Length: 287
Image 1 (tube, rainbow, N blue to C red):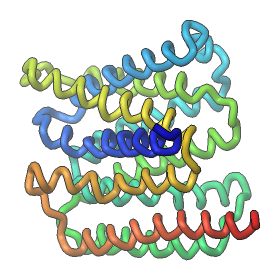
Image 2: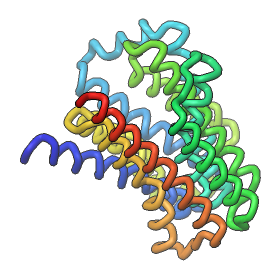
Image 3: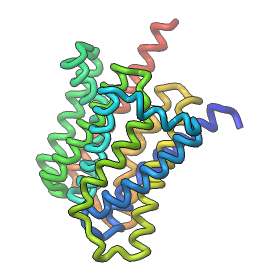
């Protein structure tokens, strides 16, 4: 198989694995701290196995060279885990996916403020369109909750912080820091978690949640992104926005409201349009 095709297939697999988050969240009828606990530790175990597979025992030494920014990365990574699962349990899956899709623009805005990296005019226009879509969805869509939407926003802010940290320190051992984040965040939920209702079936689903939605998706993304152009990687990632609520609608009949569909369409159009515009502009500069 040609490398580019293999890379696209792996990125598609990563997107599909990430898009199962809503399915797992709706299928596991347990409280949020319990889900975060088992999902997080299963994902951490899988990521640790991935680190050992990629670097061997030498990968464990990455923890010793994290530095202040590495520990900040672990902090925000864990906060993202807490907000992510909390949002999935508290609001509609469509709201979580659409709010998360604004991540590129949130990261660009924070980069402008903190790193003095002024975004281009096309990015600003796309960000305004995405903001309008989010306002329509949250303000008029009756299928979400304000606290769940707030946690989804917190998840996007945490991920934006990870992007800025990685940009400030490109050699950061992100996988090791992510493993630490996947350990401390579930550990913080331990006092609030319960064994009530944790049947073997529920436990198996929570472990699968961590291994599929965290480990498998991340592994496929790592290897797939090496084989295709960045614009294709970004476009494949954008597919997660419509696919995530689609699974939940097909299985659980959780249909987004018209306002959510309209707002989500604007956000998706802004994201895809910005990716294509950036790629086209880059090609023209290289000619």
